[in-house]
Length: 254
Image (cartoon, rainbow, N blue to C red; front, side, top):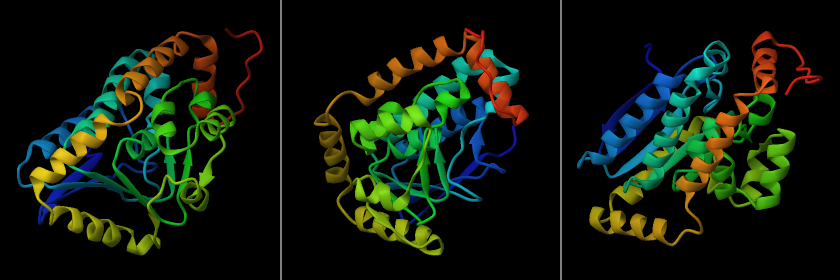
């Protein structure tokens, strides 16, 4: 497996970087590996805060549709890797910050919807193209960021929203220039890392406990429908059309 992400630790801050050109979409092994790396960082006593960011054109393009188009059976492993990645960020007791730029799609929404704080650059665009790819998922995480009816509109249409709209709706803590995004994330992480690690860990556990709903249970519910969708000809047609760069046709397909 080629490197799809990397990490380093500096002054108590773990920097986890997605870097898998051209669109930072991870395959089944990539998502599984990412979850294991986040678990490792959460278990490392030298780590006080985790930053998730990316190199390249955008933050994260989600799952590797080409892999699933060729191997539909791998949806089970992809689902598991997604679930464990988002669970590790949300339930792990180290505060997690996402520094997002460019496109934030599918699994990228899952990451942002799992962390504690989101920073982004002005060019950030948030969306869930799952319906157009013959899949489902990330609705629970999108709903952790945006109001319910905005989530429905984004989900049903596949339309993206920009950084300013995300900020207006309260999902984003701060918008900073792209060239300052990493520094801004480290500045914020440094403020948190300077606090008592015991108090921050207890604070995150307490805040997770008073959230409305159960994010992991809701996401697992969604994943059952993703698996069901993958059994249909319409889902296969959506993936084929995406890979072949053509419009999908659904007449007579169920």
